[in-house]
Length: 425
View 1: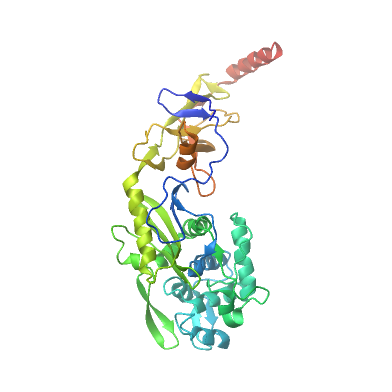
View 2 (view 1 turned 180 degrees about the vertical axis):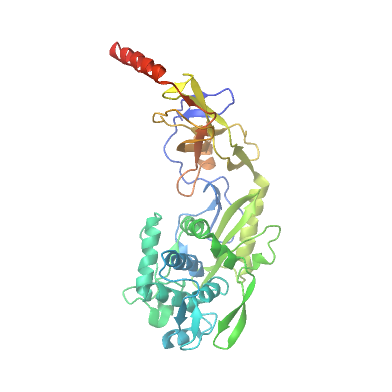
């Protein structure tokens, strides 16, 4: 791999000619995993820590509901409704809710229930009827809401997903809510990477949804009055050494159990995804999750590009005195790396900056999008270190000291000097 590097005395890489975008490689391949696909992702950077067949689409079942509630929250943000908006349960939805094979909380015809309660039922009890009620509240009809789901995925770069239900049920199990233009056996399918992308947007765009997914049980209105519903996520009550904040379980006849989780590893939030564990017990998908986390905990560490790191010195237009001024990192960036990785090899690739002019305050933002990465002379290792979910991480650069603007006479002399230098080039 051909690279040209310029080093600062600190060991920080300033300019690096990199190859193309890293291929899907990941730091680890999870072992002893029963699921068809598995993925572990750093929430902050999008760095892929562990990967098993994460680009193949599989049925995602009720983990679909993360996207459903995302669109509900978007409608709330757009002031189309609010948490206290009421939904009147139709006869069709009441009948659908009474089929416990497909629903979770039975609802009575003409019963009034709030959006807040429906979100709880959707995320905690995984109620299919509640997710349909929310879809109808937002879009009027289920097919219109499903179209909105697919459109939202496309804006995240997830093309041609062809979701068929807001609940995660196969099309033929949706009863009167079936989309007639789609085959009966059609079901929602995404890859582990795509589902992690959905989860990342849920967490970052609407973090208040975690207040639902953290709950182990709640009282909720039903056809028979208030009833207790319990969270289908067993790792909330027993995280086996980890603290989980949700997010969602799923179960499909075609490929078994799935789970999308949020927890911390070495003080970093990580998203876990397991799809298609076909073992007879739902605990197996949680076993897969813990196995993947334990492997990462054993084999990886975190390395940091610290805040206030001097990156380079630049000329500042109209500055007094006329000298190079330091640029520093505004915030820290943490990566996962193998245990034997040299922490000095956290790099930052600075671009040719547009002209920076005085005056500048110390700490003033100068540039936002400087690529941060983990350095390696080995191309395969570089790809594993820098496999990312979406765009790579960037860091903001700030002025390392106050820069004063030169007086009028000094500026005129500088302009004359610049003119003659340019004239005689």
